[in-house]
Length: 251
Image (tube, rainbow, N blue to C red; front, side, top):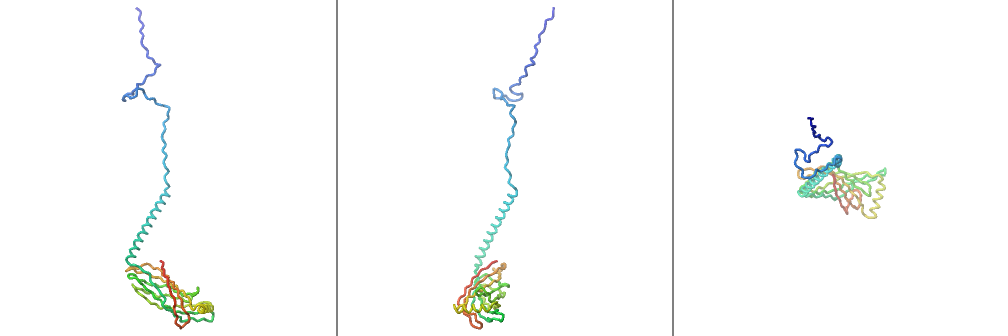
């Protein structure tokens, strides 16, 4: 008996294997159908733009400027507080100066048309402060002028003026004027026309102020006194018809 031919099923090698809808080991998808994935979409990385950092030099300069202004403002406030306290404690007042007398001891022209002059000026200095003393230091300079021409010069002696003190000084002054003949003619004409001779006294005096037991740094007083006298003749009494002094100081 002839062998019957056996037919075995041959697998279809043309059809690719199908992947399961849900990968192995994962939970079941909520979607009924798989979500298509666009394999052609390129992977893009977002670019984050960072702001440019400020320059270090500029920030350092601004920081230094702010610190400097803050320190200056603090110093100004501290100095203002100290000055306010000192003012309330000591109650400072400006000293007062006046010219009380003038004596001409020499006013003689010489052979070379110059003029030799010598004066004695009585100066009264008043310190009205109750808790402030004044040290008059050396290096002062006092001059007397007529119509822009310096006649004589001198200096105050060194001394200390205490609280509420009045000091009278007799100050000798001398000088030599060029073109003395012209100056004498101008003085005579001035006296004949008005009967008065205007003079200007300038003083520059270094002083140190004493607040209690504290001595401040040296400063300079500047005094300007305008005088009107009746004459400038030697060995004769001179009358001062008008006198006014202004005062200021600087460090």
